[in-house]
Amino acid sequence: VNGKVLWKPSSDTTITGIINSFNQPLAQDLHVTNGTLSANSGNVVIVAGTLSVSAPGPVTLSPNPAPGTSSGPYALGTLTFSNTLFDGSVWNVTMTATDFYDSGSSKIGIPFTNLTINVDQAPAAQGGSFGTVTPGGATQTLTGSDGTPGTTPSNPITLASAAGSNAAQGTWTTANTLSIVTPGNSTQHTYQSTIQYRSEEHTSELQSRQYL
Image (cartoon, one colour):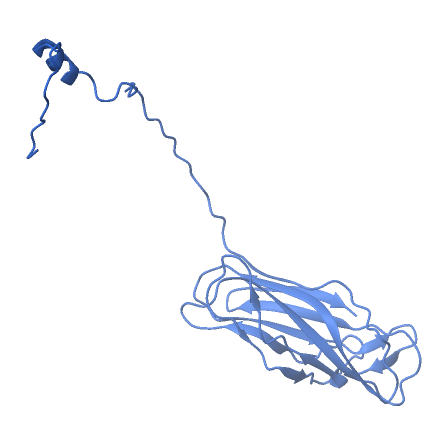
């Protein structure tokens, strides 16, 4: 009571016993042992950044387009592009395409001016990426002068870009599609087109090809 212990001994309790009872350790199972602390250090080396673009694999368009019709969209697969140079430069990803052409018969099945690229409007950032990548126009029909059928590429179109002193850095993927207008005078045959993707900034560029 009021910070004091009130205790009335029985007739056979001695004062010595009382004192001894209060001198006992409060926690009989508490043990303190000696110990040491040891640590090690580690280093990590981050490699130089890169500028890259990786085209999807070859694609066979299905169902087959018919003369005088519009067809698609056809999936072009997943395009992967990266920029980890971190030099603050404006950079972009572009593509060109050739005619659908058969070199054996020298026939143009579908000129590149009849090809429209439907640009993925939501580039998907992969782990560790930061900043904003801006998609190109949603629907872009290829243009250009076809000097050598089957070889001359179209004018480039922009699929994605990043600008400003803190230009986006990292890796992104997109899934673009292709729509086609097949001329009415196209003949039954197998034709091939080459799509070329390019990732570039003012200091360097990388290219990657896809076959259709």
